[in-house]
Amino acid sequence: MAKRPAKSKAPTQSFEETLWDSANKLRGSVESSEYKHIVLSLIFLKFISDKFETRKEELIAEGMEQYTDMVDFYTMKNVFFLPEESRWNHILKHAKQDDIAVKIDTALHTVEKNNKSLAGALPDNYFSRLGLDGSKLAALIDTINNIDTIAQKRADECHMTEEDLVGRVYEYFLGKFAASEGKGGGEFYTPKSVVSLIAEMIEPFKGKIYDPCCGSGGMFVQSIKFINSHHGNRKDISIYGQEYTSTTYKLAKMNLAIRGIAGNLGDVAGDTFFKDQHPDLKADFIMANPPFNQKQWRADSELNDDPRWEGYETPPTGNANYAWIMHMISKLSEKGTAGFVLANGSMSSNTSGEGAIRKTIIDNDLVDCMIALPGQLFYTTQIPVCLWFLTKNKWTDAERGYRNRQEETLFIDARQMGTMVSRTHKELTTDDIAKIARTYHAWRGEEKDGDYEDVAGFCKAASLEEIKANDYVLTPGRYVGAAELEDDGIPFETKMTELSKTLYRQMDEAKELDRVIRGNLEVLGYGE
Image (tube, rainbow, N blue to C red; front, side):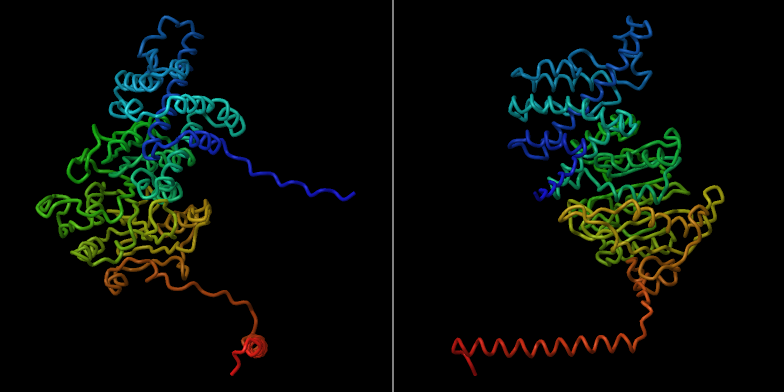
């Protein structure tokens, strides 16, 4: 008897996908933009409760049971103190009750009131106002409670901490919500591969890191990951950020708290241009993804004499791209480096004085590297984007291993890189990121990355004079040229003979097809 073909196994879901599928099924009619605050707040509450219970058990095991209700014995271990009504077990116990939404709001309010570092971080009466169906909310609580079971198995397999795992769940959910919200998702999420590339490029090992439009805090999280993966010390950095949207500001504070990252995001959410939360900051590293081509960001009469524009033209009201650039330049320390995402138009626009501003930036020798990125990296826009890297110091830096790069800029064309991970979405692979970062570091003179060489179609070190000759346009394609075609070793005469034979054969086939078509038309009564 013939054997039946074996059934192909369905691909195994990751634990993040399993949790997402379970949580998303319970969304019902609630908009994704609202639902994310429900899900992420509950994940946060579950995580800090687990940390609290672990610390409480430690105190009991050490014979210090009398101190289990004292705040200081938790904060000394960077654990949030939680009164009874704000603990996950309390929520779980009352999950099937009609007033569970009120109990969750009370829990979140109590957590924030008892922990100053979480001031302004948690949703305020959100669950009660939203009116999510009680049975769906109870089921969602059960789903999030399963993080323990699923994540612990994964932790044992991968030797990861609970902090890492819950952070991964939080990050995965942010990405899925961004994808489902489309354009609106860009307000709080930058694709992970883009953030990773910026971090690998600027190498934020030590100093102050700043993001003037920090969204949900992804740049900070990736900076910490970079430090951990390169065996650095996270205590060597300090984090500063600002976010305009209040709900996104809360997401960022929760994102940092889940990972045990201390950061100064300002006292409140606020407009970076009009309510700068860090007016005296000089940052060693700036990482940012400002809103693309932000229109009407100020009125004609506002900010015309702002000190951030000193030495430059005033940025136009119709597009904030160059306002963001100049804000970041004003925040850079004397040895600082900035890496940020902008729409491709920023590299060549001459509209409303933008060309004059770019010319001054280039003449001031601030542009270190420009990268053209592939399309479809962002969930939120199909606009082609690029990365700018600016620095105030191109002199030889023996401590960091940099060579003198004065009046020189590196151009990288990465438009052909990346891999499609869905029908509409592309990601830069780990190898892509490593290749781009190595190229930049080698050009800067870092010995660990070898010698730099121009590669036609990919990278080119251009002089200031070359940039001037190209009318101060910073589009990498202008400089890197076309990639060299690989010689296959076949002589031209041989190729031409083969191609000619193929062409004549195709022409003969075309004649035969014409004859058949004419015959069919005659049969139908449409002959000549």
